Length: 321
Image: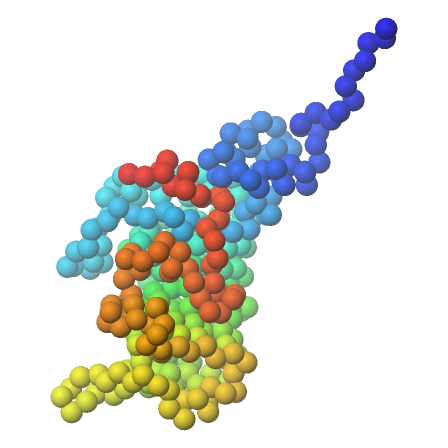
């Protein structure tokens, strides 16, 4: 009988599209050795379909709060761990990341931010709720490199005009902004002055002053979507010098908001999220609640959904301090 030989393709000869579908089921630690097998596997491991979103939402710093600026101390081992994770991700993705998501308790430094901004030139969306250890120079240099940036989720900062001005100057397609923290007239004024073409704004689960809300509604003519769901809404000062909370939006605000394509609001005593805001006195203690809770948003384009596969629970456990 004649010898028969297999005519099936070798793994290294498989089409890139097929390899990508297989490799999409791996996390970044599993991808690292796979990318070293051969050239075609290395190309597949860096495909944009795998690296479109780098979700590090499960990675947190080992930190303690301090009384002096930047009010956070992170131990050296935790910083080294973050450096290692970013090095692996940037090496494998080869510039194909367009969306980055970081945890609200991940406190990176300028060095980390500079490293990723130099290696992700096509970034369109950044979710980075913690800026304590990032300087004005550091964030501005990163924004300058991210010319294609369209969406940013950021914390409340003391002096917002500089970052709004930098975004206006460097990111011509910028259209979506989410603020996690207090939203006052100073912040609203910075947005209205430097980002007049902004289309989507979410300040959900924040302290929002009536003055700030009216400023946005009065001067942001291009705004299409506004989310103030579960916010603690504050009036002006009372006779005793305290801010007054108002539970319902008045006719003036509702009328001005009626021109928007979408206006999300919820200040219900029956709403679990609103109850949490009241309990936390307007400064949501995200760590007390479900791990996915901070990722939610009523605006679909800002909602983060489920955690990504690249940095899953297995990888997170391997990188714990």
